[in-house]
Structures are given as structure tokens and as C-alpha cells.
Image 1 (cartoon, rainbow, N blue to C red):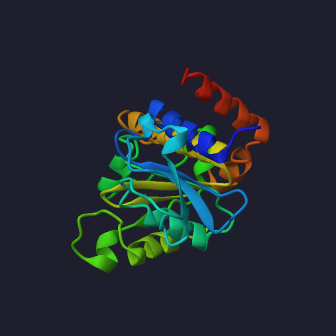
Image 2: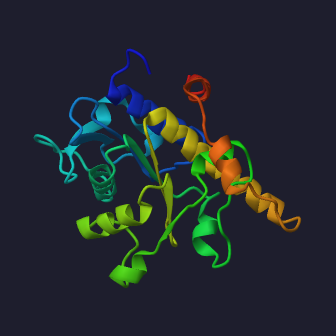
Image 3: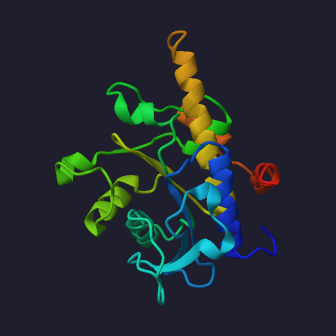
Length: 232
């Protein structure tokens, strides 16, 4: 991402995550403003695969656009503002409903575990947020500030949070780490489901996850370069 504007990098991240089957027509990705940490960038309401540089809108941490804005916006953009407020270490966020992860948001006794070395990017503990617990019957969209704050609280210091009957929200220190974590958590989930069809599975221990999850910058850059090349 050298010599690339944050808008261009974010547009690319949208298309990468769509191409790698994390996002489809829905879901969204943001990045914190590199010079104004109390602002972030997020696309206008658009299918991620279609996002271009000039679709990117700047927001403050109340998730309101900075300056005049006459384009449709994502209704769940409050997720991003709430997490950036709660987590100064987070600089990129993805909210998705990937088919590989959704079974873990639906089945009562199915827990997402690390089963591959690359899957260690998820971390050893993945919390589950249930909107119903605090807010009762809703349409399962996170559109109110208090809902987003509750989600951010459940995420805590973790790298991702599952959302009951909904999807997942993933965070990273930058867009490359975010893309890596979003993609490989989905692949790990898919492999876990495939393995479960053959019987009980073996999983990484917390110590193994801590060791395996230390991905150097060169690894993230190599993966990002591949995914960028697939965009043409």
C-alpha cells in the first residue's frame, strides 16, 4: 500500500474481500483516517465489489459524514465508529455475513476454533454477541449507537466477534492484517465444518495459537499482493 491513498487502499480492500468470498452484495469495510484518528473512511452504500476510490466517504466517530453528503450510506456504519472509539489500536474493520462463518452463529453447540496455522490469526477466544440479550426483538441490524457500543464492548480486546444469527465483525491494525484475518478466519471455519463431517476434530492449543498467530509484515504483504493481482 506504499504511495497509495487510504481511499484507494480501502476501495481495493472492498473488492478483495468480495473476490475472496468474505463479502457479497452486503457487508462493509472501513479504515481509520491516517492523520485524523477521530475520523474514518467508509464507502457509500454500495456492493463492496463495485466500490471505487471516489465512493469513499469520510466520517467522524459518531459515524456521521464529515461535510455535505448526498449519497446513500450504510445503515450499520455505527459499528465502525463505536469500535474506533473503544479501540485506539484498531485501524481497520470489516463487518460480514460470510457463509463459512454463519453456521457458527446459528448452531447452539458449534464453536469456532483454530484448526489451521493461518487460522491462528483469529486468536484463541472469539466472543459471541447476541443482540437479543440486551435489546429484545429487533430486525438484527445494528443501526443504533447503543447497539454498536454493546457490540464493541463484547469484542473487547479480541480480534473478531461473532454475532448471533447475523455474521461477524473483524478488526485489524491495518487493511492488510484485516484482509488476512477476515479471509483466513473464513477459510478456517470452512475447513472445520468439512472436518466435522468426518468426526471429532483436533484444534490448536492457546499456546500454539499465540505462536502461530505472529504473522510478520512480509507474510501480510505477500498475501495482499496476491489478492490485489486477482483484481486485474
